[in-house]
Length: 295
Image 1 (cartoon, rainbow, N blue to C red):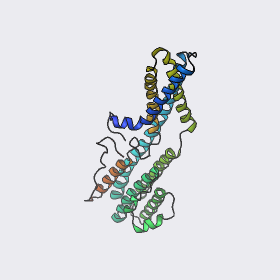
Image 2 (cartoon, helix red, strand yellow):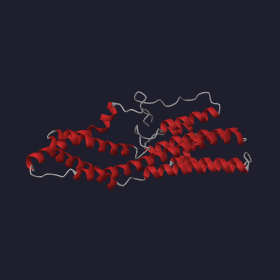
Image 3 (cartoon, rainbow, N blue to C red):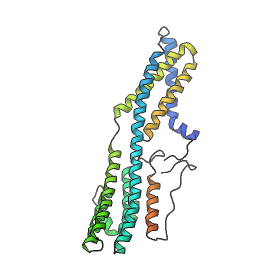
Image 4 (cartoon, rainbow, N blue to C red):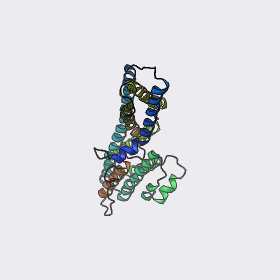
């Protein structure tokens, strides 16, 4: 997640340099075609104006949907943060089996790390350091590790109730938290697995390129070679706006613009370990690239 309000020139160029080169090349080609090959063809200024208006609506819809996905993901993980704290607090206060309660709290940290790795589609197995050998053995063969960890939580929660180490009311409250974790996991997976319509993205890009070409050919008659620069500026605005939306379309990817799952997960880990009175607590995740973003 980007932290600074102003992007560095390096990041702007890193995001747009390929598009900038392509646009300048395309504008140059369009200028020479208009002046050397089609000198008698005169385009009406209204043509790029109308297409630009249509493209603006396409990009606005794209960015609105992208931000909706990003914000929904942030809201889901915000709920997981709150429920995680309630999970630890309830287990420590409302159960009489301190050992099992602490085991379930630490196992929940494993769930968070496993869910983070699953959403980012990485092979990170950091979650294993929070699990017992028996739990790790139990997870062998499961394709969805976070869901399998929740199964273990439900099993131990039922054990606490059967052994009368937690009353029925608090059992239901804790079971509801497990259901909430499963709900948050499922919503996150839905966002990750739902691909934004490919045709919409393709045609938005295509229409921007058409706009750049028509703008160059329209301006060439009045400003000459400067039409290449002005068309590039217009194209830069439209392409940059589209790139912004695309950068947050998949909020769980391992990118600076995506959600800071490392930071969120570490924050929960710190909160839960401190709730148990642990003396060795890791530090918060530091911002990268001179404090520009968190992962």
